[in-house]
Length: 49
Image (spheres, rainbow, N blue to C red):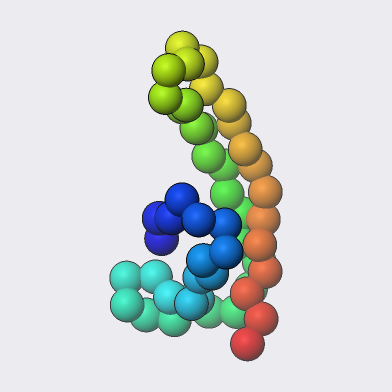
C-alpha cells in the first residue's frame, strides 16, 4: 500500500489476499527527498478480524 494521505486506510490485504490475524512487526529505512541521510522507523501493528 502506498499513499501520501493519512486519512486513507488499509483494507487488510496483501497481493490480493486477506492477511491472517496476528501481530506484524516492521523496520523501515526512510530516505527523505533533498536530505543526505535516512531515518529508521520500527514498530508493529495488530490485525484483528
